[in-house]
Length: 168
Picture 1 (cartoon, rainbow, N blue to C red):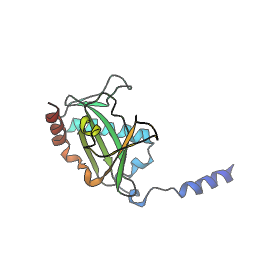
Picture 2 (tube, rainbow, N blue to C red):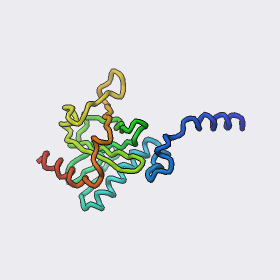
Picture 3 (cartoon, rainbow, N blue to C red):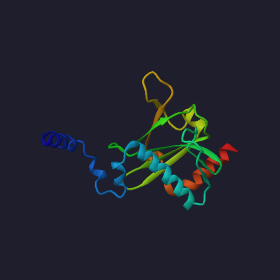
Picture 4 (cartoon, rainbow, N blue to C red):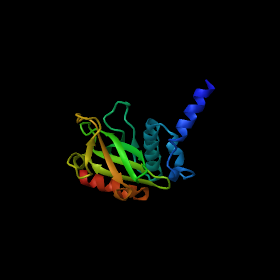
């Protein structure tokens, strides 16, 4: 059994994270499972809203069509880490669900970025090109963004207010 473990450890070592994540301030996110990355993103947004004096409401059910209500706007929230080419892939965007806006949170080794769009802008392609996640399916999509297409987290309040104004 020890031989199998040694072989597996050798294989795992060939898949190490990109060096940009080694000793990076936000590098710990790379050890989380994809589900936990998403949960950490939502928890961060919740706590960030609290520090920014923005209202936050969680849905009553984990099966809700939306992830959070911020300033009375229902949001679908997607979190991604920066890949080796400097892009973020926000997966499992479902525009058939009942929410008002999409909020994406991008975690880079040294910074936190985000952006948000009205759901109509997402569906009509103004937020970017959606690619289907499953060949032949139109239920779930991914949105790829470069870091310069996202905003620094310090612009969060302004963007939420912009979305609120566009929906009123």
